[in-house]
Length: 384
Image (cartoon, rainbow, N blue to C red; front, side, top):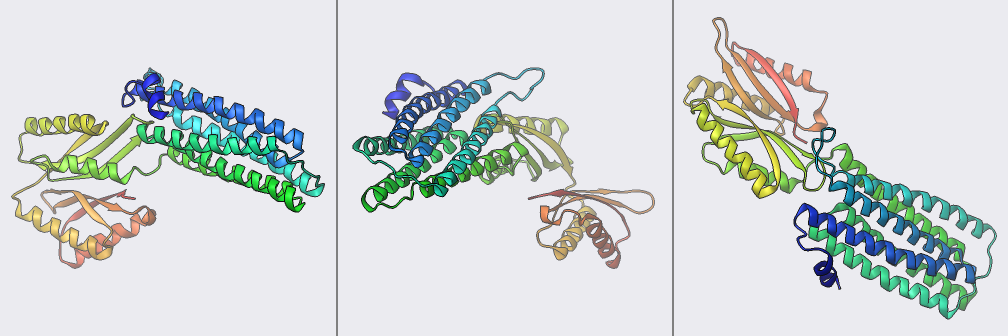
């Protein structure tokens, strides 16, 4: 079924337009399936008097609303860059995920309130073959949707669709719990309908919280994927003439809209035109191979300079003795008429943020204790 739908509605899923079509396909299927399940469950809930079945039906309505938001998010994300949004609109996909989370949390809260009322004033539930058929069909449909949307999410690497797939899987569990409570109530005369409805509501609230947390993390600017960082570093370092890379920053402006900047070290003796050519090739390779728009800053490194190498080695040793997690880069030796000036950066873990003044003093004191007469300019940056 998945292959048939892709063949009918999506031609090239690896293109921006194809990605949007995949998202639209998932959203359309989700809207149709969830609306049918909502109508069936709410009807069955009203006929049987089960708040748990009705709660599960309202959960499907939130899923339909979520599919609409996802559909709109994918369509809006296709808008090209403009004067007000020079990096495009791809983050609309993340915003749609946040809207979905808010809807889920709202409905979950309302369902929890109704379930508590049913616990305080329990009523008997009429369980019929129609009720059983509706719930069994819902489990089958949601299981298929979870597998279908999950495959689409992997096809285009979409966090929004991955969340939708997980939500459908959760619905399978929730509806199974509702079905079990109906069977228990029917055969053992135990009124656990309100408690089951409350459990479903808690499950819905937890799903909404998880989706909101992950989406907000992306929008706030979370740490870049480790695999992408390693690929970028490997791409840069494989080029002849590159001595090192540091200060790599990656910015996510939505799926397919990744920007990065880095400092790349090259020999100070190299012709500037040659350095420019190397950097230009690196930026082109990053775009072609990784779809990352990379901007590189050139850091000249002194080679064949015995004094530079000696002082660089001394500073690296001092920094390593202070904490092995620290590292030195952008090291420069500026010769003056009085004493030389050392200018360098120290990369520190985010957990050590705020300790920069103390670290600077320790480095300076250690240089003085070793008899190095020089002035130091130490700057710090985070390494995660």
